Length: 611
Ligand code: ISL
Ligand code: CA
Image 1 (cartoon, rainbow, N blue to C red):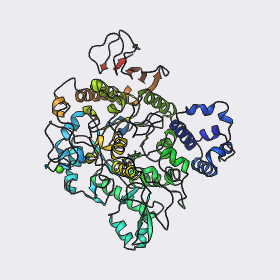
Image 2 (image 1 turned 30 degrees about the vertical axis):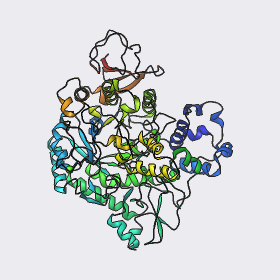
Image 3 (image 1 turned 180 degrees about the horizontal axis):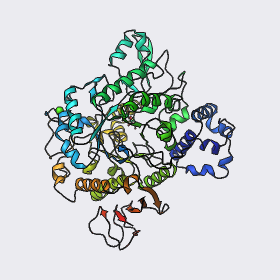
Image 4 (image 1 turned 60 degrees about the horizontal axis):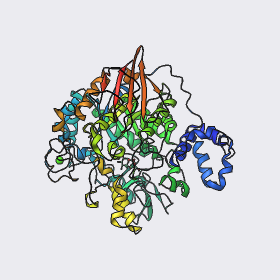
């Protein structure tokens, strides 16, 4: 067991200790490997008490001791699974395709585009929530798990969608949001009506602690009907479920089985790492709160019963159907991910880590240039620690993050080659690629002019909180603009016609990147992605091949090989806008994002060679 007498190195050698120290040091831009060097390795945790304070030391010790040892994985070979070979495509239904002209994407719209999706060459669709919801958080506030939102269509439409997906040889996973429900869910309404059984489905307290919501402000909302405060880690209309309660866990198992009985192939589990809260709901450490922005997070982002709850859910609901699971685990690093997905743990198949999404020292709302050398480093670091019993989800975009090309460059002369390079990078490193709708089109951030165009509850709450602090509306808007999730939520531009009364302003008209503009153009980002998918499917090295980084310390150059049996591919990438020396000369590339290649590597040039 770790104690305050343990050294930083002893803590770093524990799975949760590794990730927590790595995260803290990454935020303050210190290389975590320093912990292995003198004098850091000998510093006992208790000597940091003057800086960290007693309760932070105790919280850290408690957290690290939740999981004793790293996984001793002795797998001798990689197990073959469909989801290790698949490319996933995430659809944000509200913004994908509108079939009835109300400006809101719907299920019929998705059905009408299944041939487009199939032609991309992707294998499994991840459908963001389509359940009945008041849409406070665009469906991540579920009011009825077994009903489709009216604007989306009917359950019959969903059943048809699922059939049509399967008929095309693809799979479909849904989004399962069970850390919380909408405050309009019948369970919560019964709780407010005084039904004790359902009050125990949620987390009520007589008085609030200092936990902060991820969507600004306190994480507690007072309900005079019951004279108590209810916990909401997200919006005020997203009430956290009490996973300590076996009835709640049973309800979730039943929901999963209900959809598995329909033939759904699995779930993406929304913020699933937050479901186990520390008993007694103690106050969060203010220092951690300042550092990571969510006071209280140390008491719930990897709770003592997290693994138990996840393993029970997988065992009872997923395993009997052979269903797939990928958990969204904000705040988790590589070792926590292994604790929840290594094959010896019989838990989830994959998790989404967030560690690569922002260059150290920045958060999503900073308007900065993302450094692709960081992405290279973190991909190599993850691969250094993964064993043959591990696997990882590889992604750069989703519905919660700005468009990656816009994070990397601010002039769009290189829009096409950078979009292609980023797609090529995630399709050639080891792991399962997840593509977000529009990424195949080279979509960029949107040119929002003012708050009236912003729809996202996270941005709106943040803006209001800034105004309440006396910040001017211009400054407040500028503070949320770079990181607003709405950059990823514009309607897909199928044919450059305006989407009548779209729920979010249209910015993609006339930018020459509509599906219609690109579909026939062999040099388009769209065509590149389709060709890349075909290439990946016919080269098992890119799926199960060993990953071997080269030139690790060479800035702006990313070179690695993927070897399987006697076949080996070498991938060479220029991570910068500047021409740099080629790694391989006078060699014909099998695949590239440039046509002509002479002299140095061009800006963001990516090549795949047979060696
Ligand atoms: O990254 C975030 C915190 O800074 C948020 O964008 C996001 O809320 C977090 O990653 C959790 O995301 C998931 O749960 C939220 C929902 O708003 C997101 O859309 C979902 O992906 C609450 O259900
Ligand atoms: Ca519609």
